[in-house]
Length: 304
Image (cartoon, rainbow, N blue to C red):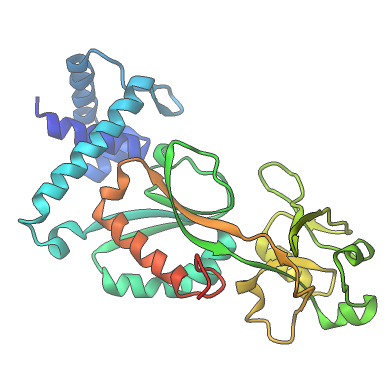
């Protein structure tokens, strides 16, 4: 048995989460992959995959072996790097990316042509949305995420900080007045932004001098989408906590209130499965994306 080929087959099946899709990407018959996996599991004396009619999943032995295989295959790529033309040989193939809808459309996609011009051999498959994706199970190479991270099985690289402001339209402020303190917020309509995963409303965490205060926003309309939150604010329906990058291009449309109060920023991280960062395509994308955030004053990790 060709052990390296068997490892490559196993890793590809896991990443594609399908024997059929893996066979198509490797241009091999599905039966060939099935035979390879049977031989590999027989050789190891362990079951690596649990197969049902609906899905594949890794056994505990399979999870451990997958991480080891990914590291070994990455080491092979690194060892060959000095002898191969990186641009011609290694920077070819598909990269699967998952982006948050609002941040992806406003910050990443408008600049994605830069990446394509730099690396024309890398084909990008970009998913958009805020659902919690299974990177390993769905064959996704990396995902951009905002906020606290929960999945410790993934590697996270922090690349930015999303800074927020509280804002409203001039029309709303003319009708309802401009708040001058955090306590004034209780007298205003707020646009409630709630989590699509938990259904709970996000509190506004506001840094007022040395004190951190949490405000429960009340209002007649709630949404679970950052772009919808912006659109409702632009209609004068109330105060909204918005990312600075959303407000800066709305000259005259939105006015920041309580400028001396700082909403708590949220980390922006690039997530990927363990061992995957050795993939040169992912390395190239991660470095490019980190620079995109570093160039943005409202999203970079630190102020100048």
